[in-house]
Amino acid sequence: MKILSIDTSCDDTSVAISENKNILANVFWSKMKLHTKWGGVVPNEAKRQHEEFLEPAINQVLEDSRLKITDIDYFAVTYGPGLAVALEAGIKKAKELAIKYNKPLVAVDHMVGHIYANLAHDEKSSPLSNLDDFEFPLIALTISGGHTELVLMESHLNFKIIGSKIDDALGECIDKVGRILGMPFPAGKYIEEAAEKGNRNICKFPIPMLKSDNFNFSYSGLKTAVLYKVRDHILKAHNIKLDQTIKITNFSSYLDKEDINNFAASFQYSAFEEIVSKVEKALIQYNPKMFIVGGGVIANKTLRLLLEEICKKYNTPLYYPLPFWLCTDNAAMIAIAAYYYITNNVGIYSNSKLDLVDRIPGLKINSAGI
Ligand code: KG4
Ligand code: ZN
Image (cartoon, rainbow, N blue to C red; front, side):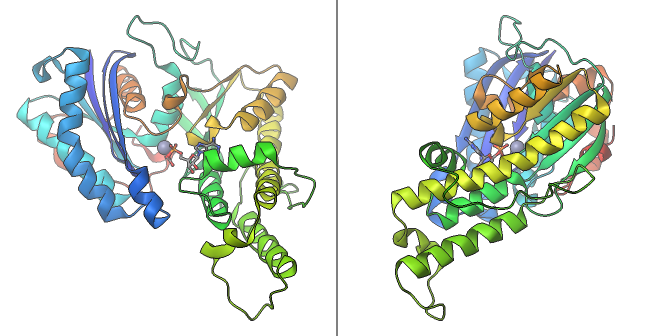
């Protein structure tokens, strides 16, 4: 079964081709440079560039996999969650292809893709994350720019959210703190690099939600705490009065490298302690057979070490997508998820039913129509 998949959930345009669970080709086009200029994603710019790049990306994956478009059995596309106008661009293209080649369309939840990326195989059918299949019950943690979720799975494509963000997502908070510290967008890898050189004991931030008795996450208070600590540090160090305005975007010009590294280290420590404390609670309560992680933030080495330690303490095997490009947004994970949708006979739309496929920007994983 050959699947051509499209993901345009945010600012990366990605197209992939898989054969069953084997990834044959994947291309991304990332508009990081453009967004660095604006410090965030500009929805209409993202849409315009998805429209411009989808056609060449499709040609590229066909060439890389040495296939013709008529060899494709299913087209798959992300229908949410994500930016409405960006999702629309991918859905429109996928529908055009499904109609032109008279093939079914599979509508995939992006977060299901992040979880199922763990089951991707290479062209020779070898599992890339050393994981051939899931063992249930399992707990999945998805941590990205838009999501922070703990999901319990009792069987394939059966999701129960046990904890989720109540305000900012972890990646979103990392990107906002990065902006305060003068880092380019997205800030994840810059925060990580700075934190490695910094001393987290120079200043301390509260660990969010530590005492709460549920599995939810909150990051907006931590972001505000960083903002005020950095501002107060600047006022004191430069003898500036509170009524003199300095823009957040100028904060970094008042900070030296050491300050930035120390703030990054303290912030990262508090942010990750919250994740680890909730994961520990979930491991104790649900005693899962495996713990899997998806989403861009797991690219962070310190977080991976912390999660490895806590999973080891409870004898729970930990998996995350490998190679690392499978952790961040990509269309290969959408193709792998689509393979499971197809084999479980869900989320498949014939040409006469395509009107039912629409973007759902705020899609929740357990309302994916499964
Ligand atoms: O999954 P993803 O590629 O896109 C979304 O669906 O949002 O995740 C992107 C997020 C961004 O917030 C980015 O700053 C964060 O992942 N990220 C990291 C690292 N690399 C990317 N956060 C911490 N450390 C990293 N090394
Ligand atoms: Zn994502």
